[in-house]
Length: 358
Ligand code: SF4
Image (cartoon, rainbow, N blue to C red; front, top):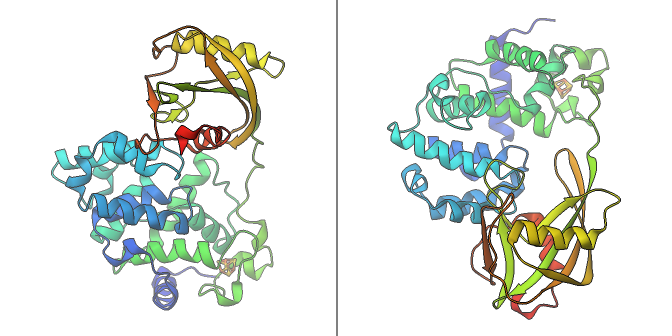
């Protein structure tokens, strides 16, 4: 079976022309639109991203507008999309790109921007500038592993490199951006992990795994580690007409986001005692636990958190200070635009008896 790029690319592009999905960033694939959409799409479904993309473009129509945005506002608009480091990277990359005179079609120079890896650089260069360079995501890895019946493990560095090497010669000089999008789309819609629709695939006659009836065995991956269970506590404190929230510093889990004061605890810890200590050591406040509101569960990439939420009351008077692992502390009132993590929203939902949350 040969894998002649001159034959494979036109067939994939014909398929794409007939089946491409409508997405707002495809209507006008400017470098800014591609940067924004590709960062939003990492680990996130297209349907989820579309309204966020539209809101961002309406608020900041150009790269220059976005580069001048306030970080808190960006984080607040990003709330709910998850993986918040992407939002900070996006802003840093936009500012750096504007300082350099704009985004370019050279993948190597794009990769010098903060948070821009090979994938995003390839996407901007090929889709927005027509540079003949590959783009490899999980969908592309799956298609190529099946097409070549290649047993490389895409979760390893060596395996990843292998899929970039397999992709590179396939990218045509004509319409490289459409080709890359077509390959990702083929993986997303036809060559799915568990139910590939090989009858609808433009490469079914070229695909070695399909010919051997072993498509589902590719790509070969080591089994994933299960997320580690973690226990935590959080306290809802009514304060000065609102609820006290604290902000974590950038660079840590949920960094830059606001959340009720909380702590991680050992499985056998005294939860109420740990919470009182956390308020004292992290916020310089003395509190008493009034009642248990319930538990919230939240899964991060490698951790499965069960957080017990308590209503707490202030002992005497106190002025909160952001200490140990917090950047800032503030009183949250409805509609103040603070960027809240999904975990914070779940936690606050347990305090719905507080009229101040509306
Ligand atoms: Fe995937 Fe089937 Fe197409 Fe092979 S023939 S690339 S397994 S959809």
